[in-house]
Image 1 (cartoon, helix red, strand yellow):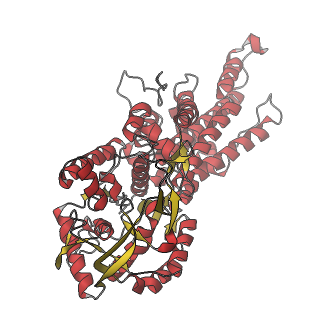
Image 2 (image 1 turned 180 degrees about the vertical axis):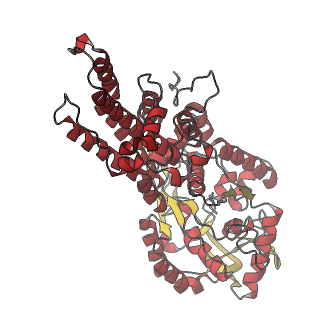
Image 3 (image 1 turned 120 degrees about the horizontal axis):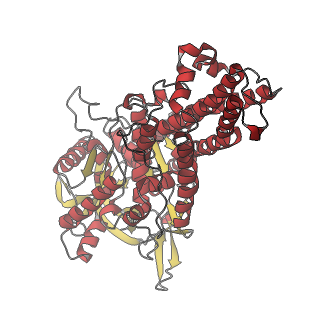
Length: 575
């Protein structure tokens, strides 16, 4: 199960590029699991309760439910447009979710983990959380010139609040949390955020306020034992993960819905909720914790934090219309920050499209498949057929060696070294990508594929199979312009053909393997690439992404009489 998580800001504001980025990362991780032959469930959705939603609905002069209905449809539309392969879209206003939250409240209450007390502190409506004195400070608000208290972490305004509400005994889970972190050192990625979480919990945990008075917050799920209180949005919202997994489960059905999650994908601004509060709630319920938490950094615009109040945001729908889906998926994953924030700029998208995709991958595909001087299928057959045992895949894996041409003394040695070196690069690609994906580094995995795009183009350029084709023609038919008086021996001509086919085969293998590995990142373009190579649908899993892993491709899978379109079309003028 690979849930993508979005904050309760979803329904109070229009989606921005950060939401799109989280969606795509979660989708990439789910598709990667499927690529490896695993069953995977992707869950995403909207958190729809809380003070922020209540105030946003009032400002829009509508009731909160209608406001959330509209917001949820916008996010569903975005998920569809980014190609998100989610199996569930959960809304915290769903009746099934409400029942789960009420059940959990009763269970925590019965176990003595909830008590009533007065709570005082600095509260941020925007962040939906209380902050201790040490995490707020006084600043001068630039637009108004007024002095206000804000959260040091998020920069959002806080107000002093004093009220009676219910508390969860979070402090009781400090030692269990620290033990979990110690026993699972890779639980949070990147490692820097794991260190931050551990340091925070080591410094101590206060009990968590988990309700708000109804006279202040009406929009939410009421405390089932006290109608004067509304359940805190983050206790409510975090439970959505197990809601769609079918909690509470019938005995024997605990894992039917996919829990525990293999990966939860979140932005760095909600790490405390997911890496401190969430595991504590699960421990309190005697439920297993998610296996990994993948956190990512934010996108900036002009090196400044994106903010709706300043208009410094990117509309994801406009971006998708302008640059198209595959370019956006590629750019966001490739340039997006896991550890550090990344800057968004249309020029960067254009640059990536023109250099990596159209000029890199698209150019390589055109070079291999549109040339009339060689035959990809013939090259595949030569290195897969038992009729050519001397040069079959077993020999290729041990070294693509060719006998020395009669007129090129010593040439064979350097040629063989280049072919063998590139063969090793092709052979190592899939495991390099897997290493990064296992480490929750999709940006580095995609970067490794990008590096190989350039390596394959460089290999093709330096080996120049088109020149070998000319040489074959000259030697076979006596090209006077080349200074040759007649055809040489069939043995030498065959050697040159084998060399040319080896170059074409290794480059085609690069494309085939990259096509398989790119499926989680750019599903549509990867499918088009594999179709153009004639790779059958049942030969597109990760275990096929090895050199000599498919002996039957080489003929384009396009309808008779039609030509395969270019993989990446030119950018339109208004780009």
